[in-house]
Amino acid sequence: MQYTGFIKRFLPFAMTFAAGLLIASFFVPIGFGRLRRGHDDKHRNDYFELKMRFEKSEEENMRLRNQLDDMKINGSNDARPQLMEVPDEADLTVPPPPMVPIAPVAPHRHR
Image (tube, rainbow, N blue to C red; front, side, top):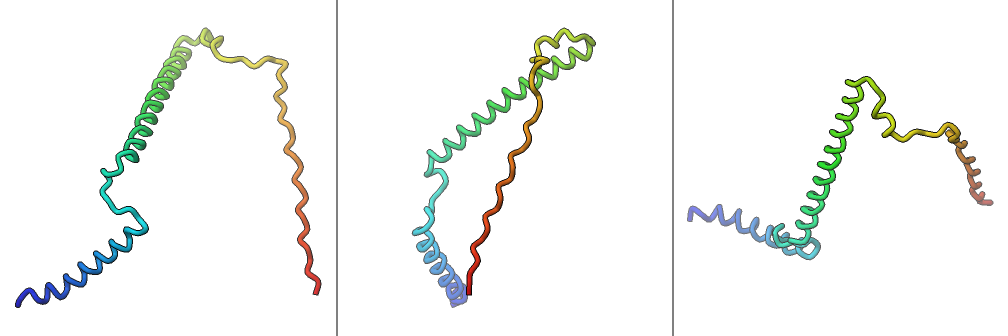
């Protein structure tokens, strides 16, 4: 007798929730995330690939910083020949931007 209030409130909620899951299952796959192994593996592979690229770029960055620090400490330009030099006869002018096309005229309606 004392559980009738609980049943009167819980039963409609449970039935509505079940009906909502049933309707939603037609549009969205309802399941646990571990059932989609291929999807997780793809993200895991992408993560490790990005992590490896990040570590490689960090090592390159550290190498370049050390090289720059050595250049600053030594005060010489002995590391300068390793850099790419631009030839004097190179044309470094920037061409002008292309002309903007004329906007088409909208047709007029005659009454």
